[in-house]
Length: 430
Image 1 (spheres, rainbow, N blue to C red):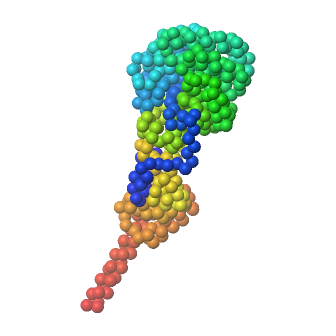
Image 2 (cartoon, helix red, strand yellow; image 1 turned 90 degrees about the vertical axis):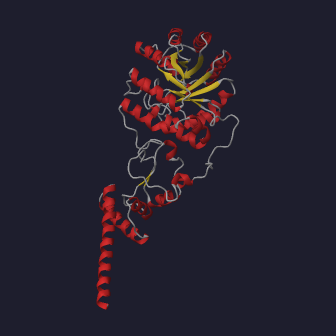
Image 3 (cartoon, helix red, strand yellow; image 1 turned 180 degrees about the vertical axis):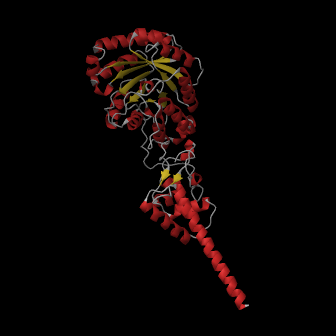
């Protein structure tokens, strides 16, 4: 279990301390001159995309708390809801810009001059401009053709640049857009001097292979940075973000717990789990990983959801080991069954010993935690009693502890009886 839930069973030889100083990963991708898996940046969108989550209602105070926490964690950018969305959204933009955070503050606006003019007045560091480019959105959303889109994009970009602000231009529904239209548009805005172009898997339809191919192609067309935004409707958001970085993307949009429109986007914690395995030195030097649970708890409470049991890093099962064969290896060296080290995130592992699957090594460690002494043969006999009860009904930690203590007491009583008998025999002999 994460945190301090349940009695953690430390590895017999010191747990995480037994790991080699340099963690090697035999499955790490072959180096590629285009790859940015070791030099990416995070655009954290909990306060924009996350506000579109069904349960989300962030007042100004909670927005400030989340922004400060993300800034302390080390995200490069914090993206806010468009000031054009509502008057309170505009005021919140102004307040967060006044905080003096290290992270740059962005706001996400439609490719519309009025939206851009309103946004630059809030004090943000940059604008993320977006417009739909797929036939679906051009026909059923804004109704504009590619000529209009390109012309308007160039006008808005020029205006934002004239104010000395960063500007990103992104297509919406990129993976269902015509490739020729897309590349022509990106080439035009790149020449206009945008800081980043963005691709967005707005409906979550893309596969990692599709992402890799599109980003790699785009990398050959534009010289600016490439931002990526992946929805999780088909469960590929983390994988897609990783493949995008491999192909040459530079920035990834995330939200805490992945909250956002529908099933949300690439989750911050999940992406960190993937990237710390691939590029541990970069990730650990840049991001305060021990804050992930704190930030997720903050956002989970704000939107009234529970952290999923299988959530990367912070799910209550994330570092729980149950099967006997797993437990034995974990107790000897945690790297046998853990690619992530819970201590990197300020968490602890838990070796489950209250089940029919438990092994005697786990029970032996628990015996030591309880301050008791048994031989290996006695521990094995005690383990058999725990497994026997667990075959009949679910058992809790207290049940297993009771069996261990009762068994130990019976051993002591038996030893006392033996000692008394030996004493009597010695007295008779004397």
